[in-house]
Length: 98
Image (cartoon, rainbow, N blue to C red; front, top):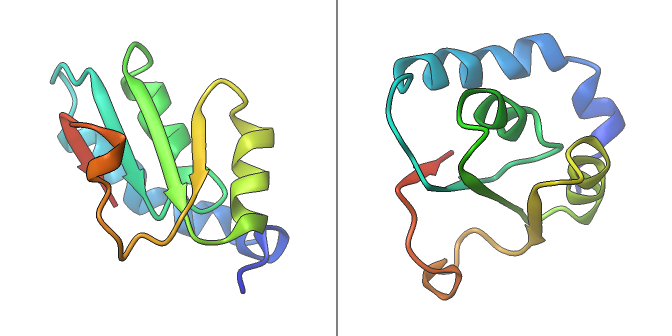
């Protein structure tokens, strides 16, 4: 299973693709965002920076990664779950980010 500490050792390299993608979405008004496979919250952090007014939910299978994400972003909802399964029970989202 994933280890958040080891994963974050390469945070610069791991964060950049999320920053690049979020920058392409700039100026759009998303109200609800789902970050699928959020890991330790790096991609979620980029979403919060760009869309701070949105309700953002992060999901990931790894308990270790979700714990790290919750510590980094305590105001965001993080759910440990298998991303292979439907997220329909979480409601509708304006953006699904992965």
